[in-house]
Length: 181
Image 1 (cartoon, helix red, strand yellow):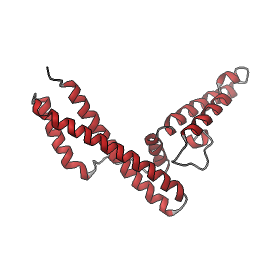
Image 2: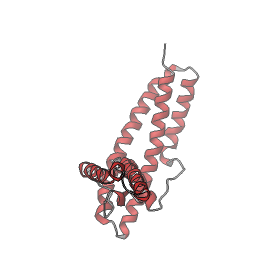
Image 3: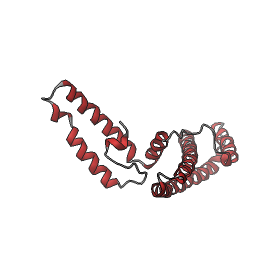
Image 4: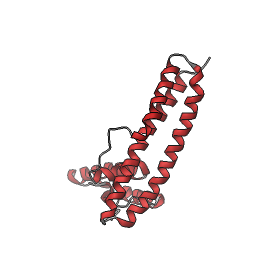
């Protein structure tokens, strides 16, 4: 069962109201709670368990804007790219050199890594803002040919976001592992 169907969100939209989503989840969770089917037949009990599991997964995915966008794109057969964004290659090369230097005990690169971390976190915030804008644009034109273009643009933004988030985790890990004495 599709997550949007499970939460009775038709037509599927990218821009969702958090409070409304939570209300739907709670209402449907109460409706399908397995305790309500304790005296029902085995088939109905299993259906309640299955429906509850899908509702939980749907809510967990759709309440997070990034997870929602990833799910939505998979539903539209737009899989993530495995290639790093070309515009980041130079920064990544410099970052990897600094990370290697820190691993080798060169503390002088700590400031450079801290600056890179802040820069990448700002990039993530900017991408998240642009995703919200893309959600609105897609919802306004969904069903039209131009909607596909917005989804392709969103896929590129999410690929970039995933790559940058990995860089942030790597920098954070190394800065925490190599704490000066």
